[in-house]
Each structure stands twice: as C-alpha cells, then as structure tokens.
Image (cartoon, rainbow, N blue to C red; front, top):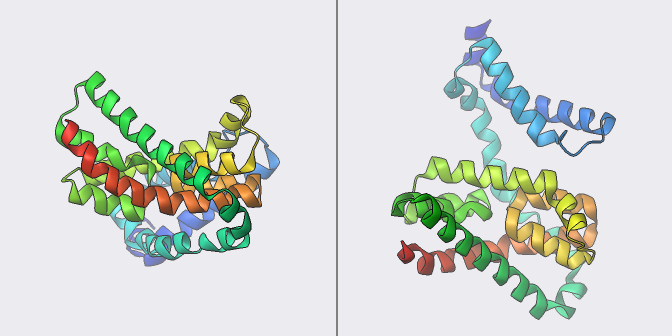
Length: 230
C-alpha cells in the first residue's frame, strides 16, 4: 500500500485537497480561531505522511501540481478589486501610504531582528520577502542569494498567522474601518491573509487583494535598499 500511494501522482493532490475540505468541515463545527482549515490541513497531511511512512518527495510528486494554480489564483484577486474600484479611487493616496508604511515596517522589523539575533547577510535577506506572496518571494530570494526554502517557509508561516489571527488582531487593536483592515492584512500577510480578509467583507477582501500586488512590487524595490544594511 505504501508503495502504491507513494508512486501515485494523485496521492499528493488528493491528501492536500481532502485534508483541507475536512479542515473546513471541522472549522464549521468548532468555531474557534485555532481550528483554521489551512492549519488543520497542514497538520493532518504531516500526520498522514508520518503514519504511512511515505516520503515527502513522493508526496510532492503529485502535490507540486497544485502550486501551478498559485499564479492564476493571485491574478484572480483583481476581480474583487475591480468591483470596489470606486472606493479605490476615492482613497487612493491613503491606501498607497498605508501599503508603503506596511512594507517599510516589515523591512525595518527584519533588520531589527537580524541585529538582535546576530543573523548574517544571507539569513537576513532570506527573511526580507516574508510578507509578500510566494510567486514574488521566491524570485526575490533567489535574486538576493538567500535560502529559498527558508524564504518559502517564512512566507507560509507569516500568511498562516494572518489567516488565523488577522481578524482577531484588528478587533483587539480597534481597527474598524474595512479599508484599513484590508490594507493591514494584505500588506502584512499576502494571499493567505487575503483569504481571511474576504471572509470579513467585500471591501476588506478587495483592499487586501490590492495590497498583495502593490506591496509585492514595493518590497522588491525596498529590498534593494534594505539588503545593504547588513
């Protein structure tokens, strides 16, 4: 059975999609923020591989095809933005300043932590793309000669945190304006956070979608400046 599953191209896709669907069902029944569908899917997938003894490389032979959907899914985020284009035009200056503030805050926080923990240049630039979508972050990490695998992990952890706690943090910090919520979540936690923003409302989702693209472009430019600090 192990050999059959490990050699199947459908196993990786099946376990990834299946555990996410199961996680969604559990989330509906147990309305607690830690029971996040994505977090549950990751946990159940890891547990399945450990129990069955299937190697990650065998699992990824099928699961890797899901990553091909990442770019078109990111582009599709333009749809909710188009639906809220009037709001975008009215608040364009404030939105751009908010996104730029988030990008700079992310860069300076990585710089401060690198100094605090004594990270070298390679480790430092590896973490700079943590708040942008994977499609952009991988290319930026390669350009900066960072550790791409660690960059991907940092992006996933950042996005997962935003997906789980984005709405909760907005409530705790008293952020009530839907535009501010969307900009904050999208700029800090990219596409995975945007999925949560869409749950909060149409405006939040649209502004978060915009932030993913704009913050990604701004981060590429800002990284050129930040990379020389360490």
